[in-house]
Length: 105
Image (cartoon, rainbow, N blue to C red; front, side):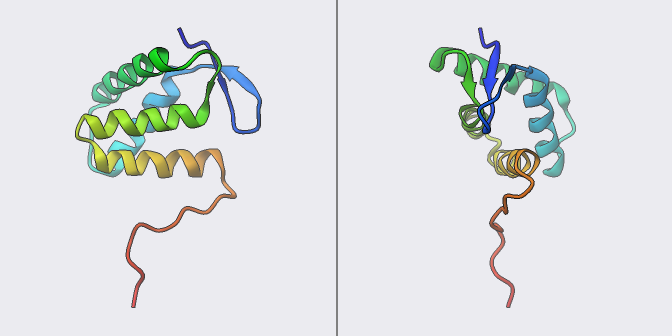
């Protein structure tokens, strides 16, 4: 069972399933999604994957990778892209995200 997460700054915090579900749902909403229950189901899959692969505490980067993996495997590739951008921008406000759009001419 996952109980703690190691953040990027090295700090260890309590694991919070709701944060993953909210990030997934926020990214899904950006793609037109409206069903929070799907986000919860995907979150459960992420947790099962993490518990099978990692020990406590889990690195935040491993959680982000697991979210992207589960979303893509379940046919939510656009949401996975949005989740990655959301997590990076929320967690690291000073970090710039490269644009996925082609350069304007």
